[in-house]
Length: 105
Image (cartoon, rainbow, N blue to C red):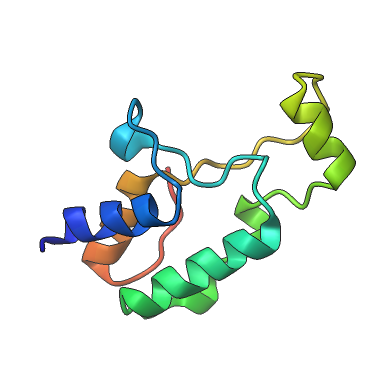
């Protein structure tokens, strides 16, 4: 299996793939639990042998949102949330190819 398929399958299996957005699926949206996302990325770094995983800052990319705020977001009630830089599956493919974490553009 090539690296594109391996990374795509990794996120599909874990429920982080949108058939309409495909490789541009945003992994770090504001409705995900920060601890789940931390585990997801730690597992990814291990499974794909990413050398500098310690350079990855969870709080830079993931939302530490309360349950109340998550409910308001799902209901469409806007909250003043600072938008974080998006991490897409295509970015994670490049991370896997390089075997090192680098910030998305």
